[in-house]
Image (cartoon, rainbow, N blue to C red; front, side):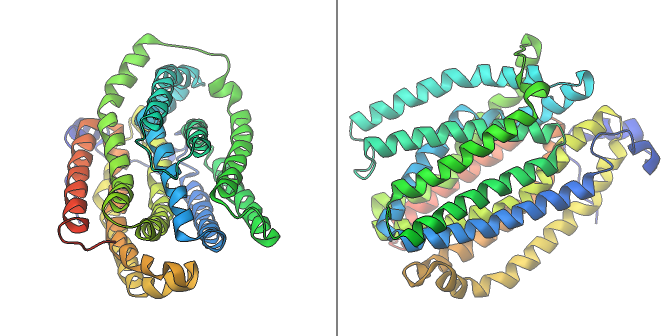
Length: 417
């Protein structure tokens, strides 16, 4: 099956219109390890996904749905902080960090340019959240303690994602996979101890366990790229301009992604009940865990495609677009269709009787999962050719549809979760 190539692709393909012998790819960073990278990252994400499910199971035994809703509120605030201050520049690190690495052997300029652009936004976001809390704009359950935890969670998410992106741009996929799996192992083990102790059954304890595990892994990962990307500081105005031009449309993308991920919880909280909010939070967390699997393709192939582009190997990428994307999408759809009929039973068994209702929204989210997978398979092509405006436009449209549908179904039609 042939798939139309994105606009601007023709110029890349004409660089090397003949099939590329495998021998010519041996000098391309990541080409010889791509299969191992995909297997290791996918395997690590599957393990992490399984451990995340175990974590959710344990947490639903520790907290009741109303308490679990607090976890959802903290996640919403932390996610907003990450997306608005840092998430919109993440793709630029993968794109230009790999390019800088190919040209100079380090990524310091890309790394510090991004940090320079992020810090003022973090300060502004923190001030806004404090003002919203003072004005009574946050749910009553969000005490000052939980506001502080949400801000701390956002900061750690920013640091973790920055270091992870640098590691991935450097091609250290297997180390990253091991590190992120270790974080999940630490968090899961700590929650098991909390459950076994019979004490400290509160949202604050659950959140503290997650923050501690994440902090430990950040330190280990940062040490691995310290000399390659973090020290000494280095800045480049010309590169900064390229990164900003590339990233500005991603502001819309980041906001749209936040809206898509969070608006359901917000509208359920406003027009539904706390129990509905807690049930849906569990379902959506399960969906987000499964999202990590197709994301593996984007993580591994984005820096590889940059290296292939630098090595003028356009035909190799063209074969991926024309052959593998359709096959991978079909396989994902087939697997999802087989799983959907059993999600209700799975929710009851996995999450417990109190969260049985999570199976219904999760079934619909599986349809979204197939579409997300198709997006992940094609995203490296758009990133390589800097088609961020197209990505932003599509994401904004999706967010508008999400808001309108939520208001209609949860509001006038009273369909709830």
